[in-house]
Length: 268
Length: 330
Image (cartoon, rainbow over all chains, first blue to last red; front, side, top):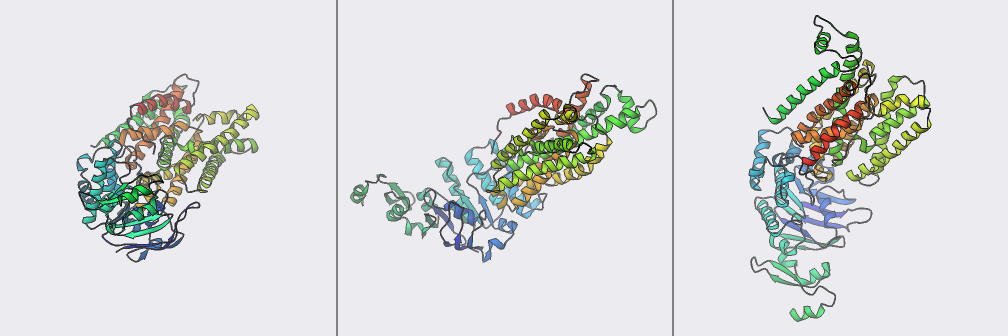
């Protein structure tokens, strides 16, 4: 089961994606990267079903999302939004329980199976000890893990993350990324909007690089992360070198001002 | 027994006691013994007329409208994801008030039985206006609230204009109604609003899980499989209905819709399966107590329940807000 996008045109009155086609294969960890305003969020919203494309089709495992019921989509794709809303007075366990909604009737009454899945999700994100705490009392990193547990309770083959690391410190960033990698190992297909190219290269199996509302390049990080691509997309000169720890691509900006041409030629 | 059950039981007991007090209190004080004799047809002295014709229907009306306004407030707070939200903020109360005043002026011979319909119509027109305008762009809770406040102010301006320019005699009775009063409310009013409020309250309680989901924001709710647009419309309609019908019977008891859900959230948390029933009881209790206190304080003078609910509620509400460490606005 893969997600395939064919000739997608999506967006708003003031911003439109160029026609986008791509394939997100089953079991992959795909990172969407690109500068601010390049259309990553728009594409992300289209894939997650929040934004209906004006043209083209998005298919999960061959069936068109547009013709599927919201509930059926919710059993296949779960989403961690960029700014999840923390409802007042709701405890960790309750919030994670909302992830079971696609499988429940209108009243949301939990079965023992639901409860087992909720407990398992809390264990996966190591929040089982805090299950009775109010979500609003938790730190940013803990909240992020609780919302990831909600995605897990949704029990979907696809989990989509919109900038999951943007507001976290370095330790919590890597905690979340490791968690995503673990889910990927467990067989889930991960799609994430990331800003840090080195993190994307380190964790993702495939990158989709966006620019000006279209896909600039797509492929394995080791094939596509190079200074000409970064310069094309972000307009800055960089040195790409293997990360001493992982061997994956790491990015250091050279002099970022426009007169950095010489510095680059000296170094490369 | 869980904390929730304990609180529910406590509130029920408190409501029963207040109900009894509400029937005892007033220009003619009646002892609890006489009240019980009359209500349950025991032998002994009775006060049939005052109790059965005046205080009993009035107290029942207070319970129903208080509960309905609280439910409406809880729904609107979840929809707008805003702790300041209440039925008033999306223009329901003001729309209903303006409609009733206009009707009183333009159709002086209008019989009272039409007032609930006119108030409900006014509330619905105001909310429909707000919703349609908010729909011009993708609906955001903040825009819904801002447009609601604007429409509310416009309606209030209309109300003020009528009150200032119209004949004092014509508007004197609507004026009492506007402050939120149960004065001279009887079985007619009860029988007029009960067929609407009771079933609608039950429907509202059934929406508890949908409220939990929509409280997470449109994007998250939709990725959990909810049809956000239709759910939002249904919830808005229920909330409008509950508040507008209540306003038609007892006037603008604005504060209950804001306060009761907050008190309930403080007592049992934010999950709507607990929040809704507790908010309903708290709202019923507040209006009942407000009305009884208004009658008991300086008989035979009556002070509007709306004034008393706010007077009692405001300090308590402020206390709750000051001791609540994490009230989030998003």
